[in-house]
Image 1: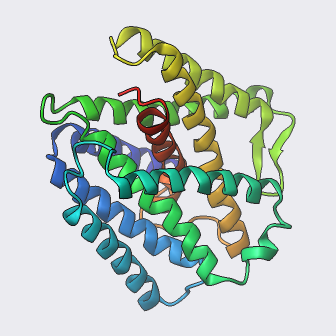
Image 2 (image 1 turned 90 degrees about the vertical axis):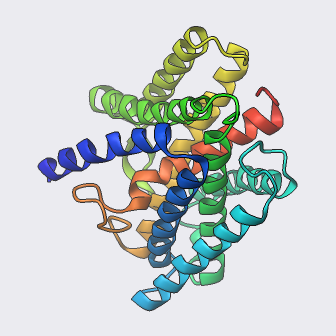
Length: 285
């Protein structure tokens, strides 16, 4: 298992960085759309769709929705100042607040959505669609003047999330005693959670003072900590749905790592929250 995890990571990490740096806007958007379709395929299982054909339709409809939005909205790659994109990002912020309440009150909260496929599909829509637009908007920020500005910002968010995850793992292994959410994810501890936040804060501080940004370090720190918190929530939320569905992994598309959702669950929350706060709330870029 460890061998497959390492091989997959050695392939995926360079591929992600290459896509960030070298794909043109439309190419990057289409690649992200495909990832979202695969995530929708896996979400079908979390929503109670066991049939392969039903999940294929679900993935196709998700791809169609994103494609229609992508190719009909004006100047989608220029900024987040398009009303429908604004709405999607604000809706994401509201969804993750609601998801926090669902996680905190689990398993009691499951009584509300356990038997409702429609609700679980709505939850999936609120997870996947804002993630797509957060990725596209951030990657293509100021693309006309500098092809790499958005790529650096998006790579920063990814490093922030990976750093939080790694910090949580190390601190949890070394000091973990008190469970963070035992009914949702028994392996997570408060010590690991705090270690992940400290790691994220350190990454934000280093990036803020070394990258010569137009954004103030304090705003960057606030947005970064919020994104790190959201990343933990994204992980816990997917764990909650998987636990209710009685599955360990969302899929098996990535050898040694599980499914697409297992790899991007933290990013589905962190990316849109970061973009919403930085672009829409603080208007720092």
